[in-house]
Length: 241
Picture (cartoon, rainbow, N blue to C red):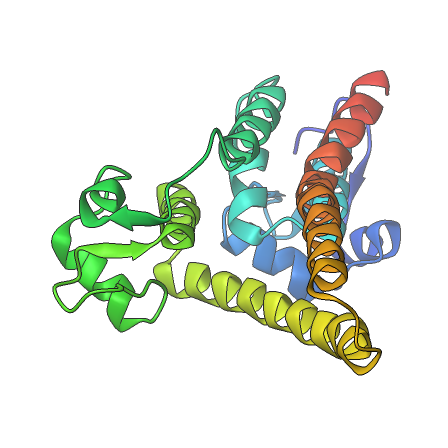
């Protein structure tokens, strides 16, 4: 059996100690195609070289950074140097989600279709309660429904199931409801109790809207970029070795 480039080969129990990963986890990564099939001796004993250990440690770091198994598999099987292209692509797609200009009070079905949805898919989004028309014919929608449609399209373009996109949208709606409840309980109700004027109430509303518009997207984008930035740092660290 050929030795690794550094002249070292390891058995499974050594691999477990070196990486602090269980045998079951390592074998799972091999079965899923995330890691290469190890070489075997004449006695059918598997051995793992230093390059295999480096890959396994990278998988461990990627998992720790929040990447899904499908994303890790794509990154591990990409050609050398293409990781940075994937990082740039991820950042570009995040930027695509940012609003570019004002949207009218309502969005038409044609506006949503322009994002790549068929009439049947739009009907499915309505049935899933992701978007809600303002008319019986289902031709006009609240403006935010267009943004939700873009968000769902972003997930679908990456091969992420609609059910997952639905879950994310529902969580975002839950956050919005929590924000709304907090605003009315801790800001609006005290103002009403104090007999504040409509001008003072409107000023408070405007202030909250401006703060949320400024801070919430910033927090969201920073959290989205965390695993991308960690991958960039990991790549640089591995390149220096």
